[in-house]
Length: 350
Image (cartoon, rainbow, N blue to C red):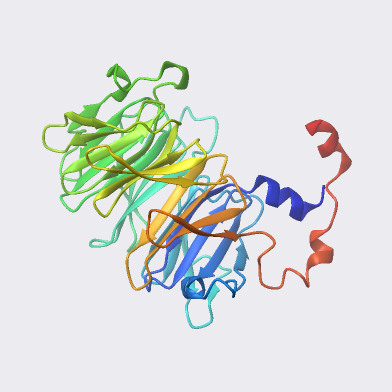
């Protein structure tokens, strides 16, 4: 199989981010490639396709697990590492040299370097919270790159971490727990175990929590257990959502709830649990959704496929953007991309 065909077939986009200017969309995959799309290209009429994407390879050894954007830096969460790349908007160019990097320490009993699975950025005090594969949440200062604090309590991979303006941090993990932390206290302040609720448990899919989201009043989470919503003050489960697959992404979008994962649709619900949009996707699994309401209203959904699914009204699929096969200069480099994969790989796969 040709390398470019291999990448198209097995492209897995775990991470997306939107630039500070809200004019550029970034998508990163497990092949170590970062794609950049100029958002105003999506405003073209149906008869004129969007312009091609730019690609910035990070190296085959870099798994891009998460992306965030702060000021004029794209922040990349990889395996055992967080680093920043300067973004030049005038030239539409991502720096090839890392401006800074933070290495995640290996625990004494660790057998592998931990993945950076999720990040939440507090832009007010320039602090980054990274949920990692060693079960630890690291609080990192973006001023000096120093790890300020470690939040310990999870006994397995942290899949999702988010926060709010009140100094609260919320994390979901493979151990089946959602933990609530405070930047002002040493220990966790609350613990949820959704799998212990018989209305949420799905025994065949386990207890892990794949995604967590929060707004001013509500906490949303899901994974193996069904997606559900909790009141932030009482932490009582008030609503269960009937999303039929394993949950890898969830978010509050305007006054609605967006849920996706291992299913051929991403679904949007009201806070009362009424299904209002059933959005078809080609992904084997959906892992990332980013959105904005201005200056151009946009949502991009990504996952295990070679396409970004674009929605302009958050309810109906508007277009699909190819990644590999839709890159500037790709035609000129076609000869290099057509290099055949070695035969032992094909034999092993068979």
